[in-house]
Amino acid sequence: MAEKDYKNVMHLGNPTNTIAVLNRYGFSFQKKFGQNFLIDENVVEKIVRDAGVTKDDFVLEIGPGIGTMTQILCENAREVVAVEIDDKLIPILTEDTLSWYDNVTVIHEDILKLDIVKLANERNGGKPIKVVANLPYYITTPIIMGLFESHVPLDSITIMVQKEVADRMQVGPGTKDYGALSLAVQYYAKPQILLNVPASCFMPRPNVDSAVIQLTRYEKPPVEVADEHLMFRLIRASFNQRRKTLANGLNNFGGFGLSKEEIQTCIEELGVPVSIRGEALSLEQFAELANIINRHRQQANSTEA
Image (cartoon, rainbow, N blue to C red):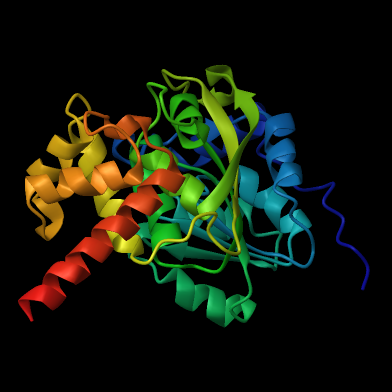
């Protein structure tokens, strides 16, 4: 089958074309949706290239806007599903900017309410999908965690986010940016910042700089933990009150079914000082602590029985 010629497509990476589309539809940006459209075609093409999108791939795009990156994704992927929450953008996408392409489906939905596992099973036979997106900054963390925690079959997530958030995803213990997001991302995936993107590449200009980060999903998490849910509760409790010691943080969070003394014993078993703060622990140590607490709880339950 001959490859399609895309020379006549009005590519939106060109700011003039973006302005023409916005004017044609009288579109006004919605602050509540955190809309900032990319207007630099070099950046758009680099994101798609670095995401490693090929004609074998099914790609999920979250928040396509007017379709700037969607166009390039369609030209490189086997199939694209673009999920957009703003009803005013749906006719622009379906009747105009993406009308040239026959390998794209636009879904009008809130991504947090969409069953992506079902979508991946129906459209990609349950094989790992690639997620590529210029994410609204106000909802970055819920989207990423939703993709990981619902166990969507993922190959990689390549996303534009606020630079500060990208930094947070890849740092280790002892740094000010280290937190629950760092640990969660690093449990599920290998993070790598691919590109820093200045505010001038967007319309309207955001107040912050951005970065493209790629999260390559691990086939198997880098740590072994008996109860994943317990480990993430421990992590949340540890960073909930950053200035407190780990023991106090866990105790204030409800104690996980153990007394304060038992929690201190668990921390000692980990081989760290009882006075340590949660932000000093690595992912490996949080996994080990979860396993220790899990063991103590089971022992306490068997004694009661």
